[in-house]
Image (cartoon, rainbow, N blue to C red; front, side, top):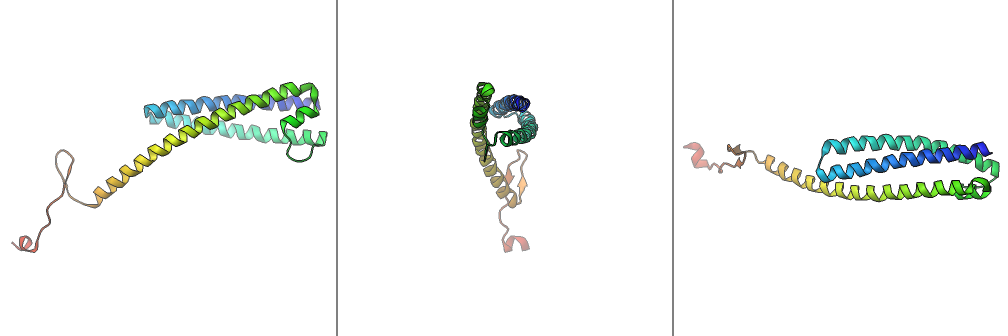
Length: 163
């Protein structure tokens, strides 16, 4: 039983480590957004995705270990770290500390990702407007002058076309 609790502690420490990395990647993405550094934003997004995949794999391991512990301690339903800490008092303090640290990191990531999402949404809104304006200008074919400004020709009347 102690082996599985130790394994759970190790898994929680790995989750904390990955969440710390994810937090730095989110912060790096926000800094790149402030500078409009598209390459850095893309790099950070790729690193975040890789980190999320690792977190998912660790989370699957955590669920497996928690299910085994729940069966041993005969705890019904969704088992929390708090319930496991009460069921195994010798490691309760360590488990609760790891849980609190992980919760804090997840909250920081959530708030920073929320802000990044709002900024990205605003930028996309502006880009959407620009694209619509450009599409409207492209619909009206014309000649461009040497400065790149479209020069719309006057409408040719029937009398001018014949003459």
